[in-house]
Image (cartoon, rainbow, N blue to C red):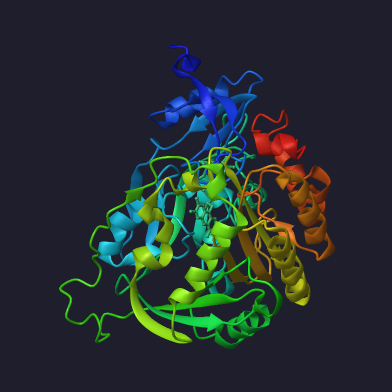
Length: 456
Ligand SMILES: Cc1cc2nc3c(=O)[nH]c(=O)nc-3n(C[C@H](O)[C@H](O)[C@H](O)COP(=O)(O)OP(=O)(O)OC[C@H]3O[C@@H](n4cnc5c(N)ncnc54)[C@H](O)[C@@H]3O)c2cc1C
């Protein structure tokens, strides 16, 4: 047998935030029998799966073993056009699913802010979209999957079969094994358009009351917050609400095919932004312009899926805007009773101390079942912060604030959380750990993130 480790590539590797960067050994198997070979011949080396590397921090990197790149394990297996049931390999991306199935009237029920993620990565992080308050996370639409566990065995699991492995793998950040085949359900769509309503909110209380008021009337909701506004303007934002457009809607009735969308040109960020560009003044100006661009208090328009769901995909390598040292995406969720106070505290800390983000995002979550899934009922705030001197001390302070308000930090974005805080934020970790020990007793599946969080 050919030595399977001969195809190893060694070089720098990071998540989308470009922090941290490790010197990684990676392999890119072409099919599942070579994935099996890697697992069966790990011989004590750590392994971690990687999809498209769109997690921001250190979940899909490993400087202490091998990273298994699964992009080429991306075949479609079957589709039922009566039920929307789709079976595919875990390296298939949402982009590939949308390209094939949107023209036939089907779409993933949950999509994140980029379509460049794999089904495996979506399950491992149990990703959420702008409809979490209504529909829950990605795994709510996953019926089952197979996992290649450390022994090399392929185990099928679902809510009914091997349910312990199912629940530990959902949101389990690749630490229970490699997800191979996935059975998921697409939802029917009549068009690739969204009826979008944008409402300007004066401040945090205002945007929260708008979320309350509109929650039941809209399938999708998200607010872009000016995180550098202060005083009475703290938390001023634009709330973007959306509902799918039906094929009989008069705005699209004239279209030959409401399920097809013109391909968008992508612009690329060719260079890393220089450090001087990322200062409170430029970010404050950007935020103010963004808030001012909407003139009216209330604006309704027709948006295509691409620009509504994936606006950042139009700018290739936008992560370079934060400069060579990279950035941290800090996403937290707070329960309903502490949300207002917690968000006010976090936004005040950012605006007063100049730790700005070009744009911050606020969303609403409903309940979620996965043991390590990030969502729980309440509000979730996302901030992008460039890595520069003093950031890690600031993030330490934020960690205490998040704990104080019973919040939680999203592992798919994280690069700095401490082991103790992680255990407090994820109370079902011990239950999860027992299943990890059952299927991976030697801790074969391990990443930079799991080593940092002392997960074994
Ligand atoms: C612009 C942008 C917007 C985003 N918006 C959102 C959002 O709205 N909501 C949200 O929830 N997330 C969002 N994300 C984060 C992203 O959805 C998740 O990090 C997702 O996990 C990335 O998928 P991936 O295929 O790139 O996985 P990777 O980043 O490669 O890996 C992520 C995790 O999944 C594991 N994994 C990957 N493939 C497998 C497999 N086959 N078997 C087992 N484990 C596997 C890895 O080990 C790792 O722990 C966004 C990211 C970007 C860059």
